[in-house]
Length: 294
Ligand SMILES: [Zn+2]
Image 1 (cartoon, rainbow, N blue to C red):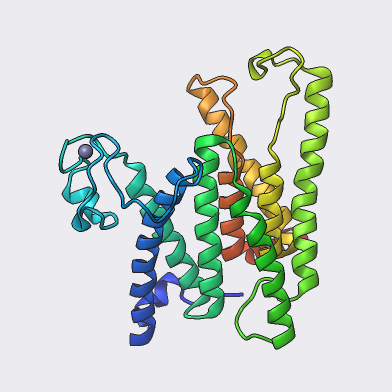
Image 2: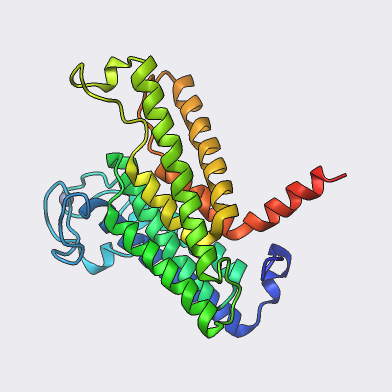
């Protein structure tokens, strides 16, 4: 599998390819803005449609021109128009991240149905990661319906022979992917919980002496069910490997800077691993086996 557009050939894209490229960038920015709203409002059980965006400091509604992704943050110099309260740099960061994620998928899969599907998956993963980062919790609303969509989609692709470069194109591959992805995390969680509750006593984690320690949330199991349904069993395993690697690196870095026993959300690292697998997973596996078989 080679990327549809490598960096060297990106200038050679046709007019229609450029049109879809710009469209993807714009939709990515707007989707990033939507992701910000979801990350804030879903955990608070608020509507994601009403009321319109407003300042958290003074409560006044934003003007339409203060609501343009990335640009408004720069023009307002990161401050509210009305009360000059600082706006978190996280908003433009999520907008940029979503835009970059969509653009990467477009450059990989071109103007096709897989691009649309994988962009929606990436948006879902970004929202789930943002909420997990803030609350150490992934709402099932973001994972369970998506898992069913993944299984149904794979069935439709297989039954109607939908064209396009699908990573998972049969219902059994999607089902096996979900089972392996969710199953491995469930097993690791089971063993880790048993071990820590039997042999360790990290009282800082416990509010009461009798409380059991939860080393990993069920939300991570649900997240891997979703991811596995879209990328299959082999890439699900690679996602868990990459996610554990990124999470451990982050843990080491935070420990190095003096934060001890910090609770680390697993979701964002699994999501990052899944995204990399979506774009380059099979290339990475092929490369690995080409290095080891001699
Ligand atoms: Zn304000």
